[in-house]
Length: 286
Ligand code: C2E
Ligand code: MG
Ligand code: MG
Ligand code: MG
Image 1 (spheres, rainbow, N blue to C red):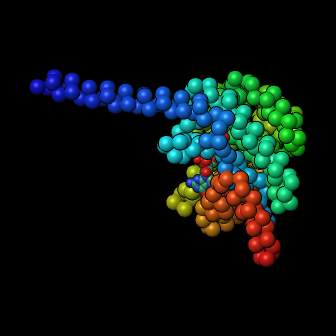
Image 2 (image 1 turned 60 degrees about the horizontal axis):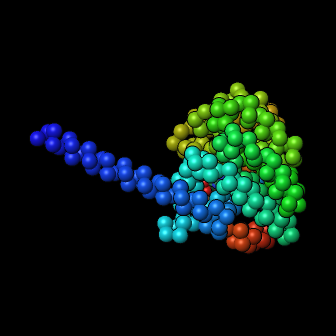
Image 3 (image 1 turned 60 degrees about the vertical axis):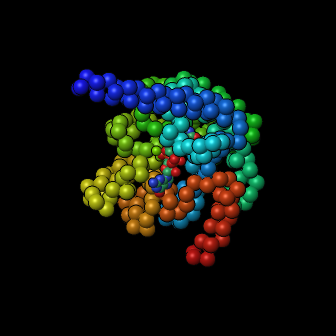
């Protein structure tokens, strides 16, 4: 009897695996087909200077609107793109869309000074093809390279330190700035910070969001802020959702912030409207 149950359970398990695998293969194929279509687009989320309350830049975040499944999170499909090598094409499209937008933003007074950050996956860096293509796109769209920034996560520092340094230096030679994304998650070590020519550090959202229940995190943010300032790097606090979190970030001398309190990521046309209205509404306050 026991043997029988075991076999049934095994079959059920097997059927589930099959379902997962075929769904995954289907997504992979769908993603391949989505590249170059308007299924893939960029949303933009404002980054603010906390002391002046002004929008200084934007983070470009990829969105995939699947024809039958609706929006699929980048948390789900970026890993698929990385494992299949599709990340090269996806990444290039992201930079191209960001350059197109930068060109458009440069012709609107409310958005002309804003920078745009693109996320660059560690896998892209390891296969070393991206700096040439970024150079070409900057030239093609006649972009001011100092307005285009790269966000890279610290996992690359662990995987291939030399390739990472080389890539960061190449981007800086082009004139771009480089942000260290999601700082404080997993691989973190304060000790490598000074070995890397990052311009800014983005403090992972888990820090600010855990401050109310855990006071030792306040000390930690303060220390990271102190270290960063001494290394000549500014900090962006990610994931600010409440007024209290914003005030705390200010008190800890973090210069920049990003989060739902200010704005959620939004499509380009909506972002332009948002920035235009924001500029006029805050000038009444100040
Ligand atoms: P990330 O680069 O750390 O981006 C920040 C994520 O936090 C975004 O999620 C954003 O929508 C979300 N967020 C912003 N403010 C708040 C807040 O106040 N509260 C909360 N709970 N969340 C907030 P999103 O857009 O789903 O992107 C998730 C991740 O997917 C990104 O994390 C990044 O690692 C990756 N990703 C997104 N776009 C791209 C891309 O174009 N290329 C690559 N390689 N990765 C991307
Ligand atoms: Mg990012
Ligand atoms: Mg981040
Ligand atoms: Mg993240």
